[in-house]
Length: 112
Length: 111
Image (cartoon, rainbow over all chains, first blue to last red; front, top):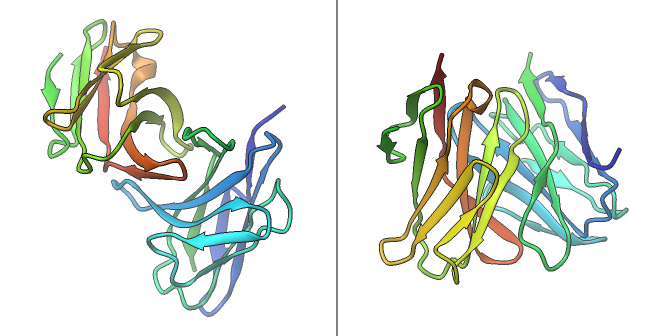
């Protein structure tokens, strides 16, 4: 099966803890994205990466970090500096030269 | 079906009727537009896209209309089915790497 996978589906974070959300794609897409979605709202861009070993901040990068060591993987770490992390996190990817982004199934992060 | 703007977040239609979901975009330089469908607890699913050199594009049961004069985009769904119930987002792009999303419209299909 080709596509974008995100894990885990649900994640619980304790106060002061860093957690990492996984995003993997086997579509050979060059660019990958992380979005945050709050209830009843649209998607806001956290970070994006257009090529391996390079990434840029989006609109709401504070309290988050990413890495892009492999083309197929773009993990997102939600740090303890992110004071309101409860949200639905979506990963997307696209191929070079095309604007269409394709999304994974999402990870819901909850704070204990 | 009735048309609503994004300031009305829910559209309710009778099964079998046509649905029209509207979206106003802000950047006159945007040249690519896309509609996504998001079911509860899932990631957005691509429906249809359109470039600014077109004013209409049709897919299977869906049509996207673009009016650049008033910066307006609409999604028409023909013969709406219960499986069409979801939140629909429009997005615009003026560069190849970044999409700007609207806040979404919830479509409810009455049996």
